[in-house]
Image (tube, rainbow, N blue to C red; front, side, top):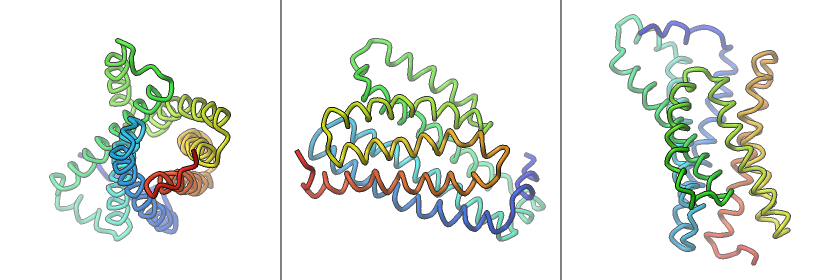
Length: 226
């Protein structure tokens, strides 16, 4: 297993920034996941069940990525490569990719839920093809992020419709949060030609997670506006 590509291509300051923002993302994503679980128990709204599942996978994938960045930044990746400790590194990568696929399928669930297609007999087939395409694409960052962005675009459109129908702060924050998540995935194309978008994407992601956390807190503490 050739992992030597991990040792080149990024500046140390960026790895430090990336790791720090990902650790913050871990905290916020797990908070959203926990509140999604609590909100689902209170309301029995399936949307919050998918919040729980999706953001758990997101937080766990950020944590796995942060651990990898810390290993690389500390210089220990060379030790693992030299000693051929693939049995330690390979499962970490495998788990990371599994979590990313889980996050993508949670996006699919949210898109189905917001679109009202959950009662369709073809939902299972849609999940199957999403899993196949996702599993094929996750080795290529641009392709995987493009797929996630396409799925999230449906969630953005339907959450915007919810905002126009209800016109309250919670639905506005939810719409803006999903729009930020969409931008996080979509801007990967600009990142290929302008490395500064590495930082922009991380900031947008954190902003989106914080905006999504706010309405979840209102629901959990019983302050959601009717």
